[in-house]
Structure formats: structure tokens, C-alpha cells
Image 1 (cartoon, rainbow over the protein chains, first blue to last red):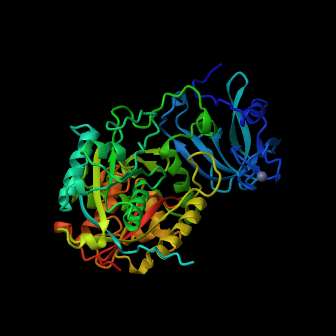
Image 2 (image 1 turned 90 degrees about the vertical axis):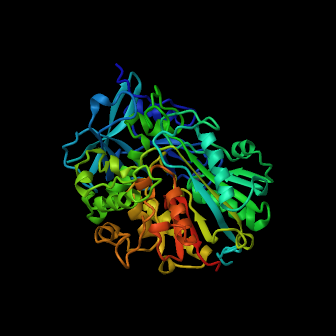
Image 3 (image 1 turned 135 degrees about the vertical axis):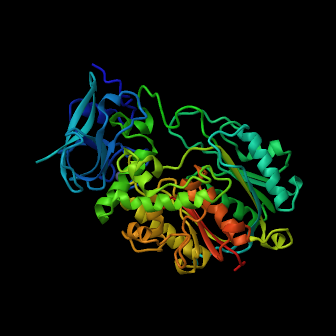
Length: 139
Length: 399
Ligand SMILES: [Zn+2]
């Protein structure tokens, strides 16, 4: 199984996020110093400024709200041509409204989409043990 | 503490030169830059030996992973100084975003402080021969691991999200953007050095173009080009004794991303909030307000930036720019309108990264715009996004 799409290459900071994604769990990074959450995990905590945030990755419900979207009709990356056109949604996480993620909307380009629509996380399996967060509209 | 620039009006542009803007120039970028620099220095009535400062930005703005080779695909200030045979006291590169206002700020500071007396600011843009943004990556590492695996990639995707967010929030339509692009191309078509010279765009052509990343179509994006522009900065005092009427720098402001986001993710509120802060600092630095400006030159590398800059700088109320432009608010041929794209911008010239905005301010305020000459006193040249870019206020009079 391989889609030809570029899979994420986890690094020291992101490895727990991608390991959770492979289990189809969406997590966010929580600073061990101030408890605030963030994505992506940066070198310092964007909330308290700690240079040793020792992020832990905590589960989310994967529920979010669509703030914007685009229909992608041309791709500059390998592996997407067979999927064109597809929708990317800009999603504010309901439990963490300061965090916004971008993912493919798996409902297709004809799905009824509007700003404020509710979505939940879904996962695309790119390779064995490599899954990428995406979204589906909730009814 | 006052936000007013201590050197307001004390530094001026004394001359300039620019190449024709072409898809692919017949000369290498470095050779073009050297020739253009020589012409600018002569235009200012000076010699290479008079130039003791060099400032520029070397960013090659493509997502395609093209190699940046000094003198070939980029030109650094040091490369240019060396190949001109100059011996500068001051040669620095600006590495942030808002490359042209950032470079101008460094040059103005250098002249005002005495670090250099004559500073050449240059910008050399190159259009690589292969697909501009195409990227053959086989894995997404570093920052791109957060966006590329799901297909979020390239500046077109970057601008499509806040653009659509604007449309949804304010009930604007893609059709409204035709007025922006048609205005830029109308003005660009009148400019002999523009890639789009004599090639205006009709509303029908704009609306017929297929979208690439909805709602963005090809005409919303400036076209990649080869081109070099150079400007000579010196003290206002010295500039008074040089051949051309000086154009003064009243102040400038730069912005920087303030919220932690995914790479290339620019939510509308980030742009608007960062832009409001930039505008507050800009007016305070220059000692003027939007009502004093008769030559705003907003950045338009992607067409939605026109609406956003008009709003954050206070030329129309928030959420109204789409109507303001559609109603002729920036029509350069309409008396009383704000000619915000009179220089053709990036959409009407090619991807010159803030040069058309700065050049229009210089040409109009120095009285060198020829048959396009307008009666203008205060210009603002913007570059990049309001929350991740910059702007410079230019005046015809020193204060
Ligand atoms: Zn923290």
C-alpha cells in the first residue's frame, strides 16, 4: 500500500503525534510547564516561552469547526493527481480554539460546505503505520 | 516614547534604474544586476566610487526547491558590490519577509546614522526554467510534515484559505475580484517595461479563467519573471544637489507573524490583526495618516492582498474593500479615486516583489512618470502580507 504522496517524516518533537495518528488518534502538544496546548510543537512554548516545554501529546475528540476551505484543482506535489479535485478544510479545534489544522475533507467536492460547519477527524492511511489526519462533515 | 521616526524626511531616493520585465531575460541575473546598478548610479549623478553601502534581499520566492546560486538565480548585496568593483563600508542582506520595505529600512537607517552615505538598494528576481512551484519531494520533513502530506502546499493554497474566509465572512464573491485584476492589468498595459505592456485583461477573460485553488485563478497570481530594479539612497541634503528631484522617506513599518500556526497558514484574523498593528506603527513612524496619502500603492502579488491592504491601512472600512474596488474606488482614471494600483502592481508588471509599488511612488513623487504623471505628494509602498510584510511612506517634500 502506497499512495505516492509524500508521507510525514517524524522527528524528535513530532514522533508521538505521528505515532498517535497511526493509531487514528488526533493529539495536540501540551506544555509541561504551563499546561497550554499547541500545534505544531515548537522549540519553545508559544504560550509561556519555556525553552524546555517537554510537550506531552494529549488526545482530542477530533471535533472542529470549518473556518475556510479551498478546492485543490492542480497539485505541485507527487501522488495527488488521481485525487484531483479535492477539498482542503481549515479547521478550528473545538476544545482548542487557538489551534487550527488543515486537512483533506473526505466527503468530496460536492459536499455541502459552509463556514461554521462541524467536522470530525478521520484518517488517511498513506503507508503501513503512516496515517494523516483528515476531516469529515458531521451531520 | 513617540513612535515618530527620528530620521523622518532626512533620507531620499536620488535615482533608479530597472530592466525590462521579461519571462526569461537574455542575460544572466548577475550581469543584469551589474548593468542596472551602473545605470542607477549614473542616473543619480554619481559614480561607483561614491557608493559606500549595498542592501538587498536574496530570497528566491519559489516552493519548487530550486537551488539559489549567487549571481545566477539570486544576487546578494556582496556579490553585486564585488562585481561592480565597489568597496563598501556597509553591505547587508535583508532576510525577512517584506523584502523591499525591509531593505529600504536598512538603507535608510544606514544613511541616517552615517554608516554609509550612498546606499544602493537592489532587488533581482529570477524565473527558474522548470516548473515554478513543482516539487518532487518523496517525504515531508521539518515544517512541511504538518501540511504537505495532506496536499496543502504552495503559496496558492496559502492565499486561497484567507481569501475564501473573506468571501464567506463579508458576502463577497470571486466576481468582485475581477475589478482588482482588471485595474492592475489596465495600468500595467500602459507601462513600457511591464511584461504585460499593451496586454490589458477583460472582466470576461478573468471570469472565464478556471480556478486552480478555489477561489484563486491564474490571473490572481503575479507571473514569475526575470527582472532587476535598483534605487540610490542618500541624505536629503546631498540629494538636493543631484540631478533629479529627491523623494523622501517619511517612515516605515515592518510586521512579523505573531501567532503560532502551521507553516504557510494565514488565517484572515491573523492578517487583519497583524495589519492593524503595522498600520498603527506606520502612521506613527511617518507622522501622517491615511487621509494624507494620495498615492497608496498596495501589494498585489496575490489579488486578495489588495482588499486586505486597503482595509488595514484605513482607506476603506473593514469588509468593504470588495465593494470599494468594484465601485471604482481605486480606478486610476477616475477623478477623486485612490489610484492604489496606478503603477500596475505585481499583477500588471510581473513578480517583482514590491518593486512596482516602490517605483511608482518614486516616479510620481519625483515628477519622472512621463505621460502617466499625476499630481501626488504622499505615497505608500506596500509589500507582502499586512501581517508578514512591510510598508514605506514616501513624500515629495522633506517634511
Ligand atoms: Zn508553556
